[in-house]
Length: 507
Image 1: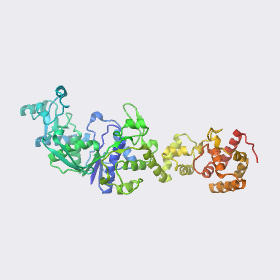
Image 2: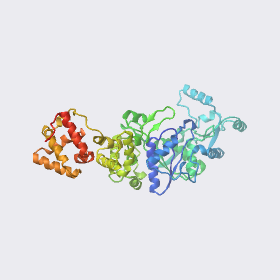
Image 3: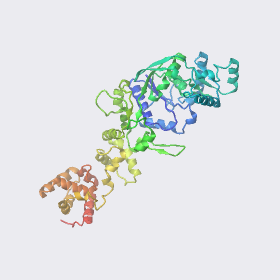
Image 4: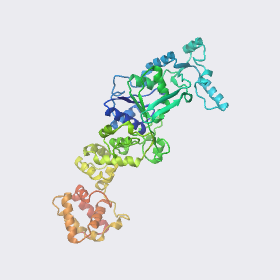
């Protein structure tokens, strides 16, 4: 099996493009095949500086690797279509010789005049097809001598000669048999006047020369496939298997997910942050939001693919083993950002602490927080990750560690303080000062022993102490919090509370 991912460097890679790359990658790895990255930059007018580098960085971050490509090399180099220009011209002229294509000399002004003429006649929108081609200036309508003269003296394009009265049928691995009639199809340009190929010619030629066996791409390319099928027929080449993936839809299901939808609904549609080199506009990315790559990959895999077993959480290795095109749906998949966060949360809980440490250290520094040892930071991560969905939330969940609570407490938190416990704070402080080994198990045992002796409600004691030490009514284990804060900080926070609330010091 040989598959490829062929993005255009016209901007940042959409999250839907990441899913397309992922499905190709999973199949290639499952079947011990080859996976090729090919940059389809034939439309130089839309080329965006930095986009190719962004694509490679985004896919690398996701753990999607390639066997061939512009960044790794390979036997089919070059892998940028702009560097393969001479190859396509040769094949385009070959199609003319075979009678499957022709030269067209129409200027933009002449094409626009024909569009206006068709519009004035009340007909459907103009397309260069089996009927209109005979009224245009091309090698089908002009004398051979004039054609030769025009080829030497003026720009031209090469158009595909769409056969008349044909039904083009092909099998799609996801959708089954699909058919188009050639009356619905126009004579697409294969080679532009600047000598660059269009997507249609370049992708068919490259797929053939690179030995691609399965073309797995987005649903938006389905209407182009009959032309590609005919191109394979025209060249006499074996055709690859086609699979057209369902669209990623907006959360409400009303159309394809776009950057505007993400902006309006408050979630990224790109894997990494992107800054437009022309406008300076910045778009957020999943990496910068605090997603783990395995969380993003896991969620994307489920958008259109349904595993045989009833489960939702997968590692990349498990996805490779379980994935198959047979279980990909042809219906569009709604994007659910909250579900993406939930899946990321599960991976956050399972990830080895040593994997999380570098990212959390970076975020810690960016927040300008006081330096802590890796050992302490690791314990904070362990304490926080049951409550966090994203990496920045790990730091928010341990705010108690680096930020003392604002006193006096605001309502309704202040209402939850227990007056009896507050009155006995000097005793509690003395109890803590007498503990020789400041560790959570011993803290728990001593406090429970004291509460029982005093006949106090344990829940009220714990809640009041939590509010005094953290300013929050919920969170990680109070004993673990106390251990991490340390005896001195716990004592200082209790004393600070007593001062603000006028609690007498001393037992």
